[in-house]
Length: 287
Length: 253
Image (tube, rainbow over all chains, first blue to last red; front, side):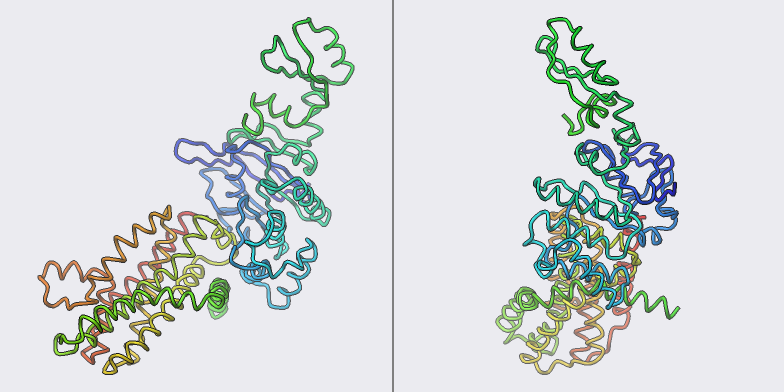
């Protein structure tokens, strides 16, 4: 398969802190790749390196075949980036922000007009185009930031925690947009600490913990490796224990043979959170 | 070569575009706020205090006018270039958008400097008109205007440098208080450096605003033009530009 993002032994050290360690990663053209991990795991640092904002301490990284350190200007031409925080100019309107961005990417005036209108239409923001960013809702701001990053038809779109701070409805609407973009052929590299987001959107996920990649694969494969069924039990009222089983039969058998002091709380399908907990002994949201 | 220059200019314009857009929307506010300080100086020192005094053979108003223009060039260009930039960089983090765009660092620095120059020129030209009305003896020659534009560029670039370097809003305040404010009063803006002891004079000659004042005053009063001062000023400008580029290279890829 065609690799669009790849890193080899990528490492970034800030003083005593190893933000990213020996990261080996491949993202394939056309897929939605999810980078899952708690806050501080190194997701944003990795994105910053891939988008030429931060220099790696060692190792290599390339986007669309261009090395991020040796050919940053070529990389800049093929990436679209939506940062976690809103990076639009708040004093300008959506259209002005897009106009500015399109100028930075050297689109001529007819290309600019055409592309801006087309993208505004794509995300239903046409009627808000002349509103100042500060006056928009969180979901609209995010959609505006996404189309702003798409003006120059990037080969890969980086979305850093795209749905943080959005309400359930706005989040689903954004998921829908991400799926449409993917269907239309955009490669998407997103980071998230929401399990559900990674499971529903991503064809493959990489789980990052303290700067290291601890798992990589399709969500279904990772669940299968762990065990499809999870049994949560409570022993003498002292904390929940998790056990993983190949299938429902194996789980039921286990539950039937439990001693009386062990209470079964729930038998359910495993999810990526279980994979994460099993690998790190920690929950993704840091608890 | 020609293509590269055209590309540079088009990038510079793209960067300038945002600020021109904002300026168009807020020009009255921009003008009003940046004129308060110099007008107060003009009224208090020039018109109020200095009307009866004569100084080195000129009326004090005539003497102080070029100094006030120099300090207006400094403060409005410096603030014009730095205030939005440092907020965009530190708080909104939208400066990253520039760094991730396929434009050179030189065009970013020049574009952001020009933002300050334009804002600086709007204020200085207005003060110049007011000053000319009060002291019509002042000579506004092409050399005077050149020195004025160069002054704006030097301090705008210093503003860009500051905005790219500071780590917090407090740092901005600190630079304003420790660098900009003392320069406002000490750089021969309100008094002549000739009467000062050699040591103090030497220290004050290090400040770029001193050279702005010298150039502007000499040309306004029809004295021989201090070319070395213009050279010092230009050198400062180039040094700030190079420093900005080094900082951008260091922080980004």
